[in-house]
Amino acid sequence: MKRIITLIIIGMITLFAAPQAEAQWIKDLGKKAVKRAKERAKEKVEKKVNEKVDKTVDKTFETGEDIVTGNEKGKKNAEEEAAEKKTTADPKTKKDEQPQVGKDAEMSWNKFDFVAGDEIMFEDLLVGEQLGEFPSMWDLIEGNVEIAKVDGENAISLYKTSQIKPLMKEPKNYLPESFTIELDFFMYKNHEEKLSQGTYQFYLMDENKEILHFYFWGHPDPSDNQIATTTEYISASGEDKRIYAGAPFTRGGWHRLSLSFNKRALKIYIDQTRVANAPNCAQPKWFNLMGDYSNSGGETIFYIRNVRIAKGAVPLYDRMMSDGKFITYGITFDVGKSTIKPESMGEINRIVKLMQDNPDLKFSVEGHTDSTGNEATNQTLSDARSKAVVDKLVEMGIAADRLTSSGKGQSNPIADNGTDEGRAKNRRVEFVKQ
Image (cartoon, rainbow, N blue to C red; front, side, top):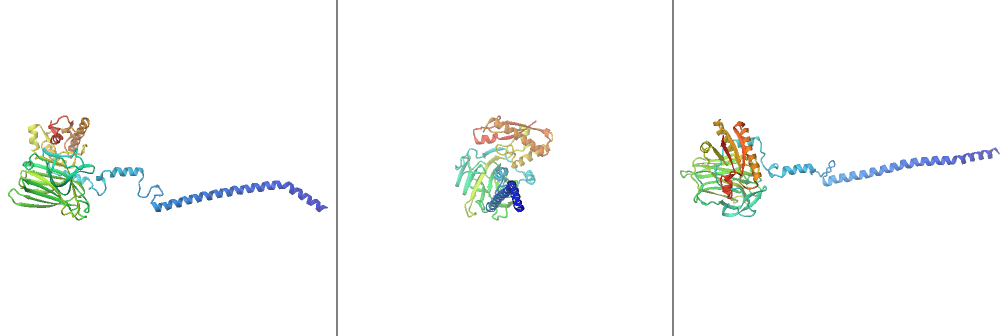
């Protein structure tokens, strides 16, 4: 009986306790489910992250993408690309394309003693010329010659062996006893390029006889950056002479050729370096130039631009004393800018010397333009150019109170703006005595 009563009591206790135990079990089960759910979620997230990392790493090896920046290796971000475009837009700024212009280069130009003639006889800046057409201010002797674009500017291209001469009223009798000739020429840097061993030929003539034959070319050895030159000329006494020289500068890109003849003394420069000095040369009457590819063994194209012929210079002091001023065409600027070209240093050095030798001299430096373009723009440009000249003279030691700048724009022409020769004469710098 006691055993039956005990079993009944136990059953009742179990009956009353069951709901509570079930509730606790459910509660425990819920906790386990939440924990497991969190673990499963974590596993899924980790799996996705791992998959993403794997894909990223794979892409890095396949495409070279930079994991940190998201850019392909070697590929710049937008800011870097913009900076690079700004640097490389001008071919002259590309590394190894052109010699870097540093202080040493500026100092060497400061020693440049070439002085351009002060009366322009012929000047061709190739303004308004059409691509593919024959240059309008020249005459063809032989070959294939046309206008082309180089570094975004017009140039005369001479294909293979071609020869031209300036188009003048007296084609074989126009050079005076004192004159200067200037031009830019393009020289490829790499010996494997089109102008490797092709030769520029420059001739000064007396009727049909050669007075001078000056020729220059890029050295065929790729490790040698010099421009080799040879000058053959006939002296006033009729003897044949020859001068060899090497111009010590990198041959890539544009260079300036300057030639001066004063009665019998002849000098030739490439950039700031004098490569020929003939003290007793016969009097020439006209000139022509040629691009000759016969030694290059392949296709060759030659390029020239900015050609100017001028009568020789009268001493600055003499002109100033007779006219109260002197006009110079030897100070030139980048097109549409007030940046003074390096080849102007010969004339600037001469003016510095004049002012040093005559300490009481004071000048108003006046810039003039031709009538091409907008009048207001020309006025602004002439203001900036005259100031640039004054600043340069002050930089070279002339007291600032001895100089003033004044831009005249196109308001005071001295020649007909309707002709090329007239416009060339109107583009000038005047030093007016104060």
